Length: 437
Image (cartoon, rainbow, N blue to C red; front, top):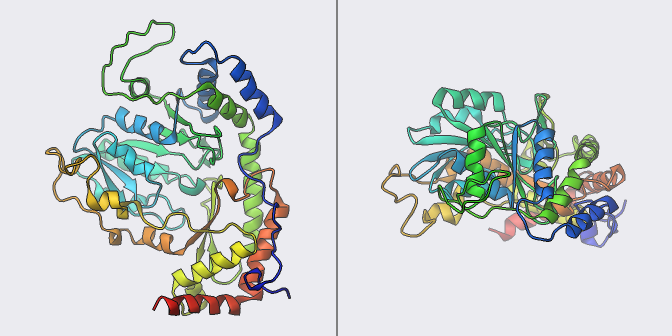
């Protein structure tokens, strides 16, 4: 039996075995070069941009799509189109990326956090109504890791209270909930085209979608300096509302269009890879793989797994076992690591409550007084942060051209560390706990 790599033994996953994401083909390169040839004179919108919008709208099954320069911008377009303003509150899951909440601050609204459902790690419908006040305007439903939220339940709650449902599909392109694509599951949706995402613009980009004509026009104003700009009409250079410059460029759009043509194929490959990995490691000691409800699919932007030594009666702090396992797997060549060490409401921005200076927007006279953020109010999200390790992002090897052969190497490494050398792993964890006092 080979020694652990962390103890000088051979690595299970050889250097160079993991191919990075996005998967760039000759077709992608030609698409960008063709767009570059057509990129002068400068004009907006470019045909590449309007074509991407039409193709994404058709792919997800929505009437309107607007391309923009980031996923964060697409979410702010949703929030602003929903009419969120000073003192208005928007519900956001406590576990997510910052942009799911900061997009609310961009419109002077106030994020109110909700705990997550433990299996999917998405916003818990059973915890939503206790957070609704007379200031609440919308719910941001985040399809975290690649798993869609419980949309039927969320929409029922939203309808009872007259709220918008804003889908944050940044991590879940290609996932399906009850037959509908991510990007079509809220009144509005924002999706990221960041270079690491399952649908990539290589650098940055975003996509807004809705079926509502009015919301689409409002979002378009937010994207374009507050102006109303319609195809075939002369630009008036007249701002109707506060707007930003959230426009994207034709090279990003061209790359994203090329990638979109292969998105179903690439999603299926990710699913084959990750389901194979799950089958190999699901019964190993001290970890728990994610279980996906049968009414939705997982597109695996991340492959999360939980570190749970306590389930096998091992008396060691979870954090110490988690960090020891991460170090051992990384030494074997598996890029398993933590993602976010803090809940969003625990970040300094929300503890200080001073986004714009002078305490705004929380100090705004329109705001409900007494809003504070205590991480202890979100126990399931706290537990996820403590237990979770991740494979994924742009260097995780989940997507093509990586295949099941790489997943077998990953699984071999898990077995080597957790099964073959479990005693050494536990000893390392206990050393970490003792050193921390």
